[in-house]
View 1: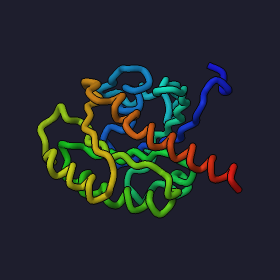
View 2: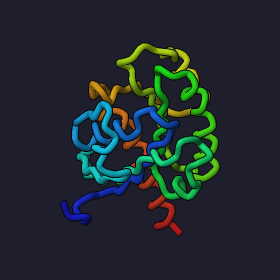
View 3: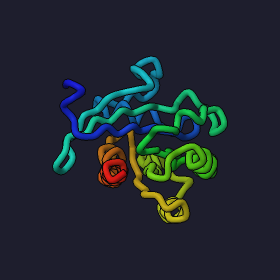
View 4: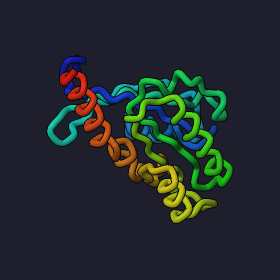
Length: 182
């Protein structure tokens, strides 16, 4: 794929506590594989993915924020130019769910107003500590979209990455139109 063969570029960062499945989500989306235990198999913390979406072809540049173990470990510069921020927590860990607010606050302080957020409850194949209702309520309070996934089974992986693509593209179009009118 040649870089000039896409209509839109979306820069996405995946953030959340350690072991919520950020690398697994990215690897499942990119290669449709799941590596259960061997962290050495994760190829990198960055990937390109090209997707057809409605009437356009989109290049997704996706960063895995896995180097940050806690919300205050990730440099704020990591959020600056992103169109989409994926806030991930582990449905089988209440602690990671409780930390989502910290990730969201840090990201909001360091992004553009047009940045799109999605809340992802990962590991829905494991016994839950966080109910669907709780997660949906948190998403409503944050004014973000919510989706549950399993990197292990592949459930809703494409949905998680594509769910806010349309909104992000509309934001890009609006910003472009504003520039043209100036």
